[in-house]
Length: 125
Image (cartoon, rainbow, N blue to C red; front, side, top):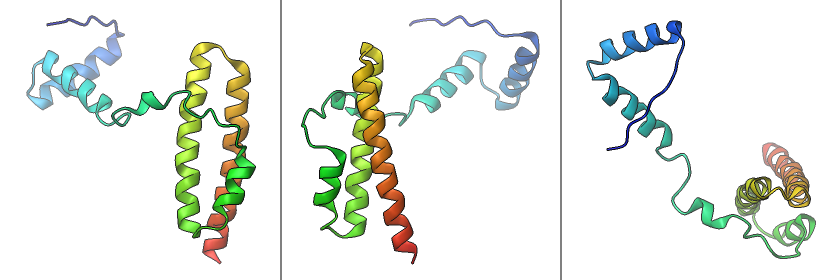
């Protein structure tokens, strides 16, 4: 089984020891449970398979124009999914050092967020 070594300061070590004592778990079990909890559902299964998947030339404005004909809640769903995909693309481009891709993703996200805010304010009227 793999082992993990970490370095922490004395103050943090005291807090850790108290938390472990209260839990009644071993140090190893306590840390392993914490790691599991932090990693659980952090990213949906197959989330990273979407990286770089937005390859169409459709602009956010063109997509919004199509979605405007839909129910506002459906349009919000499309916007949410597009933002999630673009954020993933942005991470992909950052990891590859593709500044043009990062900027394109950021700009598209900004446009979609503005439209989302418009819809949300219209729904509140």
